[in-house]
Image (cartoon, rainbow, N blue to C red; front, side, top):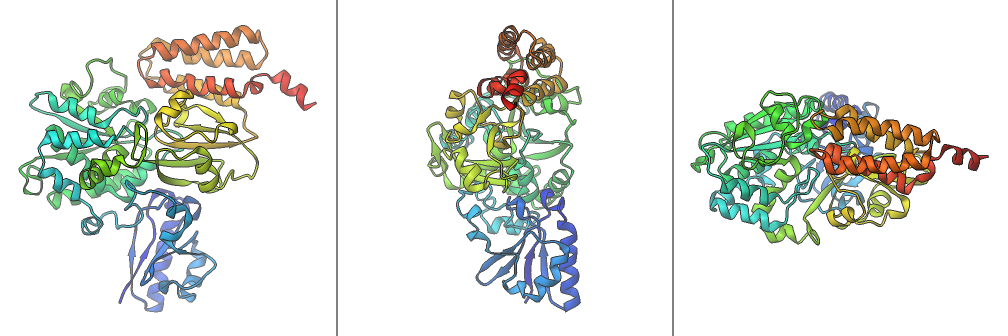
Length: 518
């Protein structure tokens, strides 16, 4: 009987040699005359253990990692196909503490199934939500999402169901579902992991969204830096179409839904929903004025629901298990789970899916294992390049929308980037302004010119030139950007700048730092 061996094809695993490991496992099995079924799964998100090879045994899946090609012969000699002991053996995968302490809803299948097997997907609960949606009135599907408390996982945290409700109420000859997979925030990779490791879940979520609001076409906009995800989604869409899950009559339901893939334009600003629409229409990625809202007048002037990958991928479980099931996770107005991505100077970088309410300290210390350098943690940035910098004294802050807003921060896409005590926060603040200047679409003055002036003002502060006046000027400039920018790029750039200035003022006073060092 053949043994199933799992070697990830996720981009993170490929970057550290998974392709060569898969080839070595197949070659060694053939040399020994052993029959195996090599499954190229997605990643479980334990990146410091990649490539993590798993073997299906009677006791469950046993993990080994990180595996290199030099380890393969030794693994066979240790009878790893039967879960044999080896220095790289991690035990039963599901018992690894990093995984066991999570609440995996959206990522329950990621790393578990063959991403391109509809049979495997269905065997693990796939398309159950879609089947239930077929039997419901569109309004009831929308209200289920509203009641679940699901909020946009892409950054702003806007209630997903409210967008759907708005689009449903508009009468139009054509409506669209657009998935924003232009995942450009620093330290984020959850969208990519879904597209590479569980693509049918995203497809299912988009079809359900189409049924809910009366949209018959969808567009998946994937950032240009994700060639593996783009190729994987292309294969998954073709398989889903052949199986009847896309097309003029989805699974005999009488509902039509077609899905198109588009590669992004390589601009950070195209992660903003209206700029993304401009790019989809073949135009330069520039922010649109609102109103009208995209849900009323979006792609090609038609009502359009725009959600990010994690938001849409969370929909199938809500339809399958019910709004209450999903809402029971989390706290306050932050319901469900959030895939948190640990990155930067951290020992155990990877994806952690937890209910809202987990603290930064739990994430960084219990899951992440502290800094990779072993030096003291000094700052953590949450929410991408526009997120605030929090000091070590704020690590007990819980991950939920309201708690972060109360502390002038944002959860964003769930990216957590860790810095040790060697970081210069004045340089990080300058980088935020410079990043905004480079990535601005140029449409509004506060963002286009404010960010450029911001770099100059920070340089003067650090140089000790009329510090008091320039710090006051920086505050005024940030207020103008926040209040006057058309979109979040200019509007949120002050978050990292002001948080760095508030929590780490000594980094902006170079003469003071020199005197202290002496």
